[in-house]
Length: 294
Image (cartoon, rainbow, N blue to C red; front, side, top):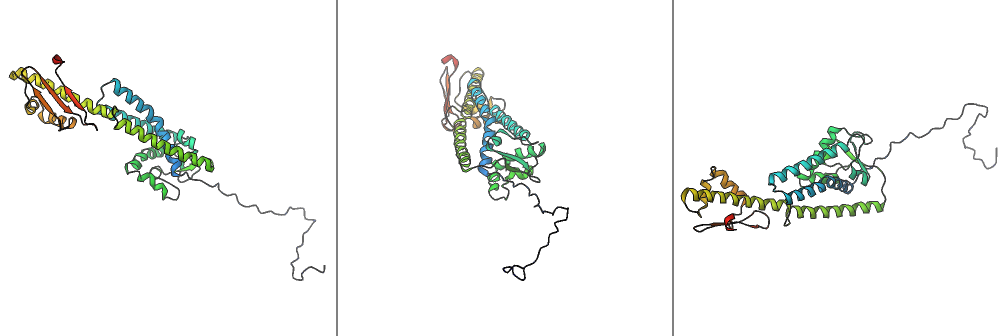
């Protein structure tokens, strides 16, 4: 025995004549690590996909408003149609392994909550797409649920039994770029929403003014009927309302389209003039003068 070998050291014997190879224990394969998308990544992707449908729709609405007389019902119908197209687009491209454009650019995808490596079906994707509107309707609280849920699931994910996963790892520069892009898109959406809803010349504001002008035209027709029956124009609004055929509904139309302040009904022997204010944000003044006096 060598001098430096401890006495209690265990002795290992190897049979060099054994033909069978030594067993080597290999570690069991580990499941791939799933990274869930952050709320900012999801928000940027959602805004890109929403803009893909809504921006062309808003352009069409703006052009239609300038070239045609649209009622508010037409504007609401077109807006509803655009949202229906968005829901269908998100449902189709969030199932079966497909990825919507916004999510593809950001590098995330929708997967099953039961198996993050498997896609979801169409019906679950449809429920998830409708869930966006529930999340937004709850003062955005549905989206904010992702801050407090372990797998960063928002309300729409619970409705569609889904999760949103990252398709690739992201460095610090890409993360910062996504955050700045998200802030820029939010600012752009806010500007477009204001210009299309509240700014002078927007589709909604023009529709309010058109509705007010149409009400004055209806009052003008009643003035002509009053003169043909009684021989004079009247400055009594109630007399005109009674001539409408449906006084209750016509009075509701007046209240719905005209501001109660600023209404004037001026008459003379041979003519009349109606002045009112629309119910847009600027309370735009509308005036009607008979065509023969213009």
